[in-house]
Length: 309
Image 1 (cartoon, rainbow, N blue to C red):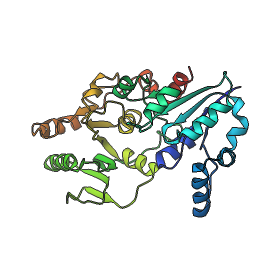
Image 2 (image 1 turned 60 degrees about the horizontal axis):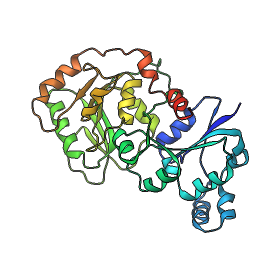
Image 3 (image 1 turned 90 degrees about the vertical axis):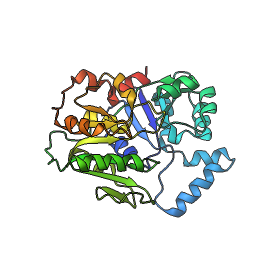
């Protein structure tokens, strides 16, 4: 059976979680380069990758390079898509192997080079349209999570993420939650503590993705604050779908998705004081169960089938 190879750097905790969760027999996940276990080896590898010597660069490429002919499709995720790596793969594969790029984050500083030389897929509709990329819906993977395990609910609302200019919105939402006598925990990665609300927890270091999953399961509602202009599905939106948790978001485009239901998703208008009453009513509505045909559309299995098509 010929296989699919996914290449991505596994630095972020979610990337590590994703790589360990893939259980499809035809899919192999690897880092592009050999793993190292010391700071000195890491520095040597980094320098070697930048030097203009093809043999030195190839020395550090992981074991998958020896089996490159085994793969029908190679998908390089954006965090691994350097020109040197892509040109190496392109020079080694035959016409029967498809090389594709997956943009998990936008914007991308190498987008002009990528779109001119490769088949690029992206989760953001606006960005795909602007640069002529192939739009492909975002996905989530739950293969390693036991959803049947019962978890006590400890709070009403949960947010996790970097500040990125969102503190003002989070502070206002926290005020609404407090006024409604509801509970929340906002885990924010930021050095600048702009809010002194007790439920906003400033983190000095990132927490692992399994820890985030546990806090999601302990909460009734996931909070999502998107950047202006972002229309693609985020990890938070998919977590709400797969964990069957309610979502409060500032993404007005989410109404266009087949999983949208007003009982499950509240679109929050920052600065609108009338939202206070809506917040309380939203929490009181029963969760609307969605058919598995909807959830399956955003699964990793569906994504891999489409990108391999």
